[in-house]
Structures are given as structure tokens and as C-alpha cells.
Image (tube, rainbow, N blue to C red; front, top):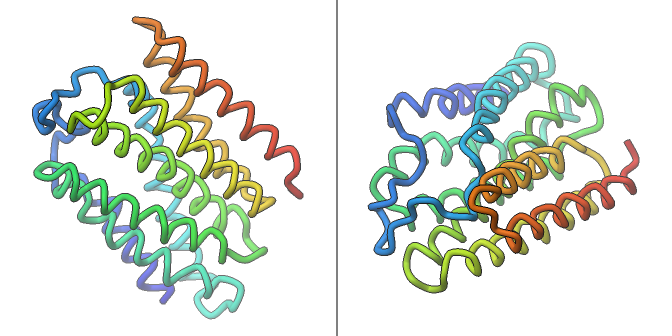
Length: 229
């Protein structure tokens, strides 16, 4: 399973090659075009994917070559492999189907959080940290997808859709971080996304969305203060 985790991380990191030039959902993919949706973080925030790809490769590579038979690493590997294997095909699907990509990213999130919960106590920076930042960003990204679907398919206007999405993201983040009582990188990744949302809503200023994102940051930091590491 150590080899499968490393291979899945490599495939996941190589997935942009299957969708060159993809910079997020095209506004025209929605019945109601999403030209500047308030739910979406500023573009710079997505640079975190580079860190995620590299850290997952480094972590799973360390696990393969140094901890292949370590019982402390074994429980988190199967769900991580599932999440990364689904993620390897996410970008091509996202180019043609918003609902399909949304369903896939929630599967990725579910298995990433499961992997994080099963991560052991040894080799934190190699085993737990890369999975934590991956799961944290997926928490934000999956909720952004929900907000885009709600607004893009005319279920509700853009700002209410963004608020629903943020409540969902913060609620999940606070719950996961509280249950973990460790892995601060998870909460940091969600906070990174929330800061991106605030930046994206400064011009024009959307007080409701930016304000809720700020409160979400405060809530995550408050829960983080109860962690054991």
C-alpha cells in the first residue's frame, strides 16, 4: 500500500497535464454565468496546490522508502489512495461537467479527512502534515463548488449562495479541527482559503461575505487553541 500511495500522489500531481490551461470553472459552464462569484477565493490562493502536490509526493515517498512496513503509517494509506486516485481525474471532468466535478471533490474530501483521522503519531511532517493541508484545502474547495452550483444553476443569488457555502465550510472545519485536536495545517489551509475570499470581496466590497469569512477565521483559531500540539 505504501507504493500505491506514492503512485497515487504522483498521478495526482501530474493531473494538470491532462487539463492544460485549466484555471477554474469557465463562467459559461453555468446556466447563470459566474463571472466574479463572491464565494471564490482570489486567484493567488490557488497557488497552494503547488505546495500540496510537492508535500504529498515527499510524504508518501518518505513513507515508501523509509516506513513501508511501519504499522503507524498503515491505517491512513487506503483512504488517501482513494482520495488521490479520484483527484487524478478531477481536472478533466471539471472541464466538461460542473456537477460531476463537484461530486468528485466531495468524495476526495471524505476520504482525505478519513486519512487524516487515521494518520499516526510518528513522522508528523511527513505523514500527517501533507494530508492535513490537502484535507483542509479540499474542505474549502468542496464548499466553494457548492456555492458555485447554487448560484450558477439559479438556486439562489450569488451572495446568499456564498454565505451558505461559507457556513458549511467553517462548520466542517471547526468540527474536524476540534475532533482532531492536532494537525494545525488543516485549519491553516482553510484559513488561507478564507483570507482569499476576503481579498476577492474587497473590490467591490461585499461586507456580508467578507465579514462571515473573517468570523470563520476567528472560529477556527479559537478551536485551534484547544489543540494538544
